[in-house]
Image (cartoon, rainbow, N blue to C red; front, side, top):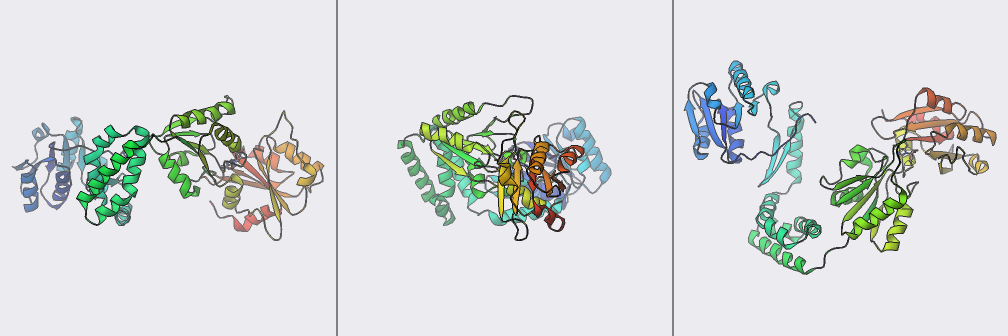
Length: 459
Ligand code: SAH
């Protein structure tokens, strides 16, 4: 994001528009909606522009642009047909640190106007920083169709009673109350045009809420999937939007974390290689404590919380402490990586079963039922097996697995940086070294790996 969208309060602020044609008029319309005071300088102006200036309590200055006009204004828009004048306005304004927009010349602007979707006080700005105006207009049209016209009235209503709600309800309850307002019967009243009834229903409901006991906290154990945010479930996204605080670890991708409610507190509890992680007991305790404060606590984990995720232990503690919780499955790394690598985990010709195994070394060794792992027609998926890859390869071969058994490493699966390295169980450890494969990585072993050649579709 190169340009930061901001919501500018221009009420009664003097803004200078240089130019009096149709483009200047268009900008004036926008500034007028924001209740700015319009100063327009141009030899000639459109009738509409003249009226906008008048309505805003501003001034029309007949003539050409002069530098001294910048003196008492707070924003400048250059919209003349003369590129020299536009460039002059831009350079003068910048010299005075005034925000300036030059129509159709992003290089002369310190700000640009986003495409705007408007519903009363509600404004959605879409900006591509000038790089794809057609795309932003297209998006605007799409968003227009999604938002009910009644939204503006609801937003206005919310603005009217905001202070009362704030005084009446504690913070933990307020958010739920507004959820009720924006999703409940009030919306229907507004859509039917019953504004007064809507306001009354809202105030009645507020009284009811005041009498309720404060809500208790809750924990959402949510699987964030392997990386691509598109793989989240609807439920995950909804709960991520409701959370007051989020505890996340290293495997949660930054794109997924971006989707958590902006003002939720974020607590990192993962570990980095050379640093100590937050001990599991402390995480368990933190979940309990935060929920007991009445908070909605999001425990966000990579992949699925119940697949090598220690989610079970955390929920155990919550159940013991009587804290309500819910579990939302996520796409586990094996499922995500296999799909994005074009390696089906089962296939009529290759594998009738699949095993998810932890390859995490304990004191440099791996204790696993190796004999069972070399069964024919079975796909093996090793999680956490990068450091242990040489051991895995060695033991499988020692227990009788064919050295030519196809094997693949999927690094950062489902993300834009995904890499897939294909070899055999004999060659994979060395390939991992040469290609400098890093975490997180998953190893898939079995005949299904050969299918990648025809089924690989991602990147
Ligand atoms: N609960 C997680 C697994 C946690 S164990 C899940 O269901 O996916 C951590 C291991 O998962 C990593 O060592 C790696 O083997 C695997 N992993 C997680 N995300 C991955 C990704 N995007 N690409 C490859 N492997 C991944």
